[in-house]
Amino acid sequence: MPAVRSVSTLAGVSRRVKAPSTARLRGILANAARVRIVDARPDEVDHADAARIVVTGGDIAGLARVLSVVDGGVRDSEHCWCGDRPTMVVTGADGRDLARWTVHGQTQLSGLGDRAAELRDAPALIAWLAEHGLTGPRDAQLRAAREAADAEARRVRWVAAAPLGLQYFAEAVTLREHHAEERLAGMLARRIPDLTDRIRALVTWAGVPAREDFGTFWHELVPQRFLLAEPTGAIFDALAAAPLSAGQLDGAAELFTCLEWTRPLRAGIPAPLRAQLIAHVTATGTEPMLFRMRHGYGAAPEEPATSADGREGVAAAHGGEVLRRDGAAGRAPVAPDLGGAEGP
Image 1 (tube, one colour):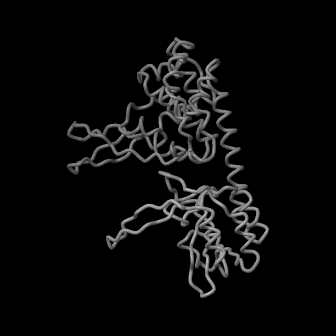
Image 2: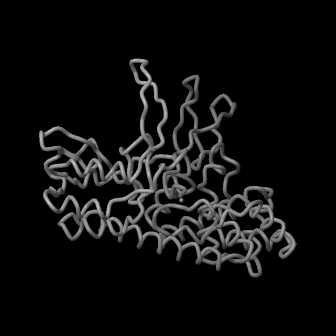
Image 3: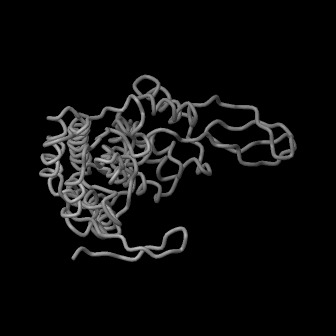
């Protein structure tokens, strides 16, 4: 007997909703006269430009063979609406809709019961849809596979760029192992005990994601977090200790435009370093890097500002203090950091 549970409706009446099962799905399809499958979300199935197919006759039985779920459904699963397509509208011989199901994230089916259910063979379903003219799900599957491969290659690059001897600990961080970040920090201090050398190594590592597409992955911010824990003066001294490589300039540019540095402003960048960063990013930076520079350390040296009481002063670019004409000081607004949002 299929599992059921009691659900309170808006009217306050208790009704029993069945858990999803393949038997229930096939029972509904057995009574179907047609199935509209639309490459759209449930609220967009009537859009004229949405690709669709109509399944009738013997093809409904073919659909039933490839459309099966894990009985019982997925408990306590988070639902993201971004991947809800295609939508299947099952209609009976009398023209009434018998069911409306949605494939979620190409792995689950929702609408069959009181919760979503895992598809038993999602690739078979996607292939069947493509064979019958609905290629959008297959294209999305191929695109997702490419993106996953790119993300894995990027993760491997980041691990390989870790300071020498720390790749194992960096790998553990990317795999979200328990206390992995703390172990990495401890090993970093032991492997590179000199503070200046450690800061310069971290700046190099922090520059690795600066030129990647699609923002910054969460683990790629680890070197930046380690840098933010060091004294401000030590960071500036380390960056001035020797000429900076292109990768180190990338890392410094990322550090000095992150929200933890700019909101509120931790410290203004020394003029020689600021000039070097501006020249480097202007000549070689990506669009996100250029945006952050223009709205941070690369802004005009002085800009008019008005204090809360209406008196004018000048604000240091990169969000420094407002020096009012009465000699008091306040905090200048900081331009938003919109480049490279964090990721997966």
